[in-house]
Length: 379
Image (tube, rainbow, N blue to C red; front, top):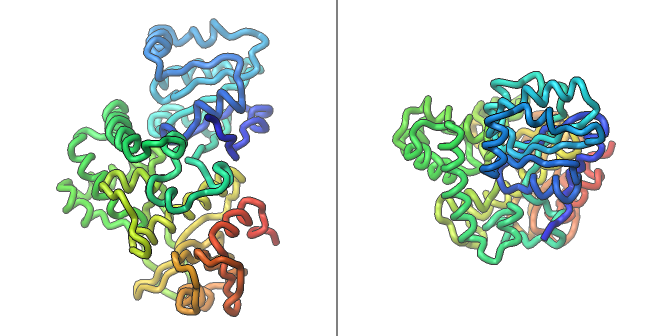
């Protein structure tokens, strides 16, 4: 079953080649097959295709026909040497190349020129609410929005396969961590810190690895697109924290790593998952619509905070409550006193939109719809 995706690569491919990045199983191959329909596709996850091109990379060039409009190469990071051939073909032919990858590390190290201008870099995320229709929020908070997991009738089992067979094997295959056992301990500890401020020393103690190694491991998660770093917003009137927050790219993956099979209503874990889900919608929206303004968070050293700040003009606080009160808006008021905000938004499970003074209460479903329609960001 294929659900159409919000990311439209067609306009990009009329102008230049595209490098599409995203964690494994986010639907890159399905998007290529269903929405792009290239003239030919090389899938480097197939052993025969990988071996053929590894032995003779020039086959990409030798097999190219004059009427080939789009050629796709899936999981290009498994054979970076192909980038040299593709680089030359982009320069000398009218064919567009659609390259996909689940790790940017090797490509960034060896082919920054291709990534930096000759191919437009796009990113694919797990499903967003608009792609699945009537989103079951509780299900999304627990088992996440990876396409094959969302469409599965055995989500927890399939998440286990993903975590065990992909996350650790991918790291081993790509040589991204020398000690897979230590990295496995780190993954579990990092999943427990999903949505929290980064604390390398604390994670290092629990994972039994040096703090400098923990820093490297977080870089691995960022390079393989398995997480988002949200940097702190610097409001001039108050001293803000300097540490970033880290969110796993998918709630289901984070929950499976720590063995969390349920989210009790009203618990901090459910609240964090709700916040992470909205972070996911905001990150996907910024990427798909090419918004350049940053997404940050605000937190002072005395504990005042706002979950997200869009640019320097919109504060977004996330609360799991079904009936927001003034108490839930304290952080937005504090940030408004420290910086000039155009809008203060409180996203909750309330049933209807309303106002508390200058704070707008948004039901989460209406907030997500307004975000993607452009209503929230129109001047």
